Length: 410
Image (cartoon, rainbow, N blue to C red; front, side):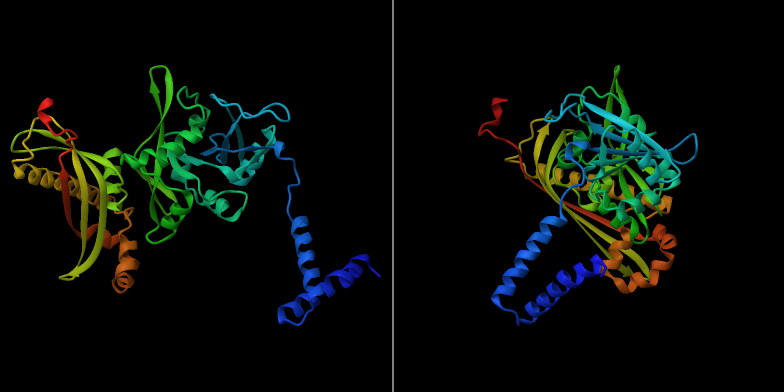
């Protein structure tokens, strides 16, 4: 008898029969113990690594550009330098290497980079994906498709479009950022809590946005700057994608407006000037909440945008009498509200001028009023530029910021 058929008949068939009896509650205690033992052994034999871990190296940054020579793809990995021998630890301090590969497909370019690396690149720990501007404008459908299909890639890296080529950023020598990947993660996770000047999104969330109607979404933005003779990496603004292609960029002011509209405000500052006294007041915002509600009024689609913020006076150029003049706080609240309304109105007008709903208004309509959405979804690109908005921002700045009982000591 064939050995394979013999093993199946002597091992798997009785095991399957025993498992079925266990499932039906008809097996004895001895058979239960055998099944548990067999499954434990099978579990231990099924897992493991076919290659020693020291043969791998983690890819921290993944860059992709259009190959200028062939018109295909150029992929660049940034990896940490590893010790030369067994037991040597990772060395930090500007200790990164880059490996590039080219190919007619993204996967072929990745495999070409494998050949040029001294260790096998491990792609399950990518911190950020940098997309060259030329690649973004041509389209990132193949890249996204590969990340979604191949389990060796992670779906949680931060996504950025580069002003220029991604390879230039990955190969730059940063004096301030010894490990650029971790610097990017620090900025996106920590600095974003205090600044609205850039947009940060991970791949899984970007896919959720771009795959839903109207197939438009925002991505982060990075550029290479000079500080004297030193190179520095700057995360700022945002990039606009429609149907998988880069179609435009947003500067820092526009991105601030987007973050207000999206309700992505945890802590920030607003500087406003009080008309009554001419004082410039820096207000610290502690919390911001945005609610968007589309309604139909006189056969027109109107979006009601309500923003509520709380905060405190952080700095003032004059010495206002907060305690005895309540109109001052009223004026501060009013001016802060006007600033937020101006931000939101300006970014909606810009999106309507470009005729691209990268603000997610159609998605809001689908969730809040599916009946109207069904009537408009087929022609949304033509409807969006003519929708009306009503923005109302309500500020509640109550704390004057004084930490001493007698402010006159200043």
